[in-house]
Length: 281
Image (cartoon, rainbow, N blue to C red; front, side, top):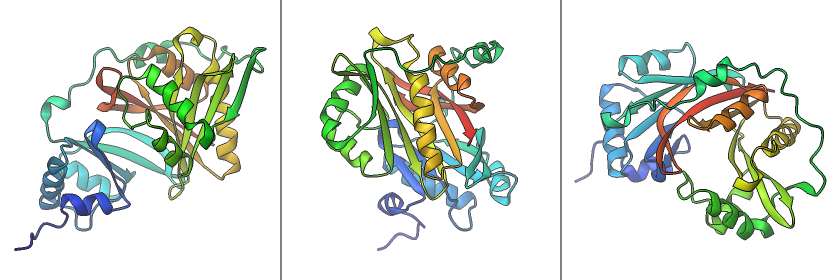
């Protein structure tokens, strides 16, 4: 006998506007299901539970009926990305299947970062001698995977796998790599959401021995100019809330703080809060 639920777990996986991310036990919803109501929300909860996901994240245009619907369904506003939907502002709401997951980390550094005067922190021109920056290519996938594996014991995506990196490179993800002494010492990527005219700065990492040199500060504008050339209108980033360095770098690059996504990403030692930053190009 067939189910009368509007979406099964398998059907959910096939929808373009649903992004199921099992490692972080979350589902991102970029388009509300038709006739969204309490019953539909229950169905989403059931489908998410079948995939061991306990957080639903909704991206909706600001000041619309969709935003009002989510508020009525007790979704929690976690932040915003201005210009995300092809120039239109986006609000980000969350529903937690497990209330214990909705516990913000008191070690979030954002209040300290926002107190800093970052206007005088000009980036040094050019990389130091002996460093080179290049675009990541398929024949570097194995080296890139080893680089990320050496830094992250846990990560929201299987970036430790060369095949996955190749898939990313063929799916609108652009990697910048910085080399020194013949090895990758820092990397970052821009993941393009072509349907929305937006791109995410992500996968940022630097080997411990090379931190404090501003290597990521060189990669942000490198990637940003590429995105501009490709017609991207908005850049955004989800930055580890406990990372003083990464939040400072993002702020220095002219990004605006947009809120905090609680226990959002499996990274480092477990689920961590992620601060939202955005910049309209």
